[in-house]
Length: 425
Image (tube, rainbow, N blue to C red; front, side, top):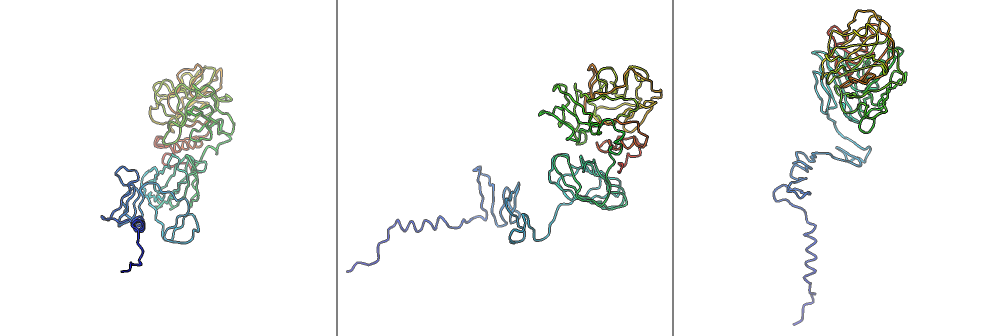
């Protein structure tokens, strides 16, 4: 019998032919679910089931991601069009809209619909760095006003959507606390002290980070003057420097003081001047707000919280307010060295009644402590404005600017004309 002409096939070749089929076959599920445990911790980081693919979550859609997703090229939704832009959407776009009917600090929703039918409403922008975040704000009722507060909004502290309108505005954050109006249908910029710039002597603002120079630990060695007079406040000794970036008043940065002080480049004559401060006292031990740096002249909060202006000659030594500040909350305080000296607390003005007499020195030049130094300020100082004597309307505008900017407008005296609404430019 003739042997078969069919060649012998070696088993190794058969194994080689079959193995690739098994190696590259489809991945199949026997339960309708495929889990991917990339961390080998018996917990699936990714799941694939009949609904879709879930990353960090059981999928509830074709693609469901819980956490951050990064696209390094183009993202196309609803289309296979060749990359016309980095992000291309074919179809409709939906965004969460937040309905607001009371004072609110804005957070994660970009569309804000404001129902002001029950009264004026204040919206506070986030104080943390939200670089690139956009808010679209729409006043949905004509009644009352909507005030938008932030540090800073195009170099102001806020703007107003007016009563009798349904105005809107769109803002974008440019880093830190800085915001910019992209568009607005209104013209509601707020009044700021630039309007009285010719009367300003010094102006220090802790919410404006561009005016503060500090070390790595937040120790402030210079607080720059915004009045245009370049009378900056300085401290070269690190142990005597107040700190920045650690505490705030209603979200806006304030300087923290204990046994610290800053000296002005140039001392100035305090006669015929008005002083305005936003402060928060942690405790009272004759807290020094402003003083001379060589003699005992000072504006301070007494141990009982009353305001006192003391100087070398009467009536300053006996000039004490009848009202008192509290600790642990912010206040707007001030002093007027007019013909009849007076005190200001949260928009309430009080003349001490006695005519101003002269003193041996008329100079002020130190913030936060007096000459010795003794009895330093304990707490926060957020903003200081010193100006020439202002008329009643101008004084109340400065008070309104500071109160609304620092979120303490509720403290304003009930009779103050700007208690319920800020001053528009």
